[in-house]
Image 1: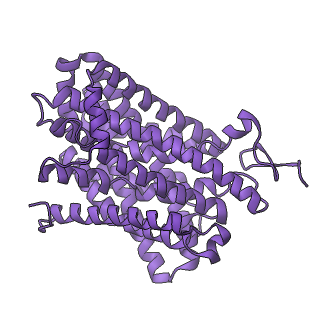
Image 2 (image 1 turned 90 degrees about the horizontal axis):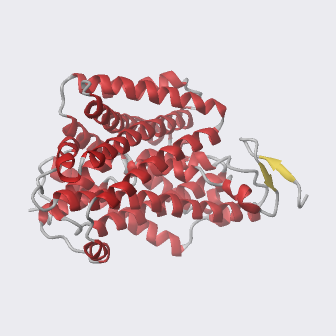
Image 3 (image 1 turned 180 degrees about the horizontal axis):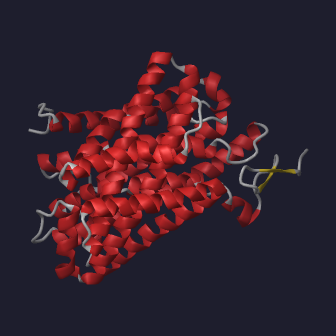
Amino acid sequence: MPGTTSQTPDGAKAPNGRGPRGLARRLMFIGPAVVASIAYMDPGNYATNIQAGAGYGYALLWVVLMANLIAMLFQALSARLGIVTGRNLAELSRDHLPRPLVWMMWAVSEVAAMATDLAEFLGGAIGLALLTGLPLIAGMAITAAVTYGILIFERGGQRRMEIIIGAFVGTIGLCYLAEVLIAPVDWAATGMGLVTPRLPDTAALTIAVGIIGATVMPHAIYLHSGLTQARSAIRDDADRARVLRWSNIEVMLALSVAGMVNMAMVMMAASAFHRGHSEVAEIETAYHTLSPLLGSAAAGIFLVSLIASGISSSVVGTMAGQMIMQGFLRFHVPLWLRRAVTMVPAFGVVAMGVNATDALVMSQVVLSVALPVPMLALLYFSMRPEVMGRFAIGPWLRWPAIAGACVVLTLNFVLLAGVFGISAPGLG
């Protein structure tokens, strides 16, 4: 009946037929995109953004902006899928696609989850090791323990986890706001870098490929569709349309924050390193170079943001991995098992003595290989009226999505070609 209310899975009351009213009710729609946005501020972004700023100043900021716009589009599509169908991408793939393809998708997604965890563990561990002087493997153990402790809060409901992750997002954002205020940023050059697409040389093209090629993260696409699938009580298409509007607003806000954090990383590196230290390309080098250039406060803030990024992105990666496994295999996975599946390979890589930066690069290569699986599946389901009903995307959304997918997948191919020594046009 119009005007009545129903309960959301987290206990919040959602009005039926009239949409949320007032600030408190609107705030209940904020959460899924905030959680997914962590994927765009994970430790894998740090090294690439530092390289871009140190090597080319503010010139590649337009690449970060373009990457963020593509990310917004695909996260909005993922949220749309969950809201409209009430199911996540892994579940829809399991029920609508051929069985051999489903098994392949699950296997590739599990490998991607392991690669994601590797990068995230390393980020938190590097930060802790630099802060405390502990060995890298000890930093990983602490990161693992803290991550598991935070994941236990998920038993209290999705909303509790959204608040915790939101706090980490806020911490990272405040850290980079402070960095921008400490560093002598050239704001005129920043503006030109955002609106003037140019690549100074072929090495800049390689970095641009790295920025865009790792933009849309496989686990974030899966996760966002699951976080929105039971977001509120939806009884008809009018309710769906209202929830979709709020979801799109949240995606724009959350991904805008993530985009600004990435831009701030490039700006800080450009300000601190471009003149005189353009060779800086590793997280450890950036930390040690920051202290004499901008002071110990800037270096400390950098470490806090890195640790927050590593821990929070590891939590989100585990949530995504659990959703992927349950969606594809139809059974509940204990949290400790899900944590172990992706954690053990990360510890193995570090125990073998692999260089941390090399391991980060390796993880991004694996993610580049895995990315087409969820991206193409998301496009396929989003376009099908038999799945999405009247909410299947029309030409005004379909063609930008296809164009964005082509850009990301092409640049992923170029990135992989370079890694494996295959000559790619434009890369010399």
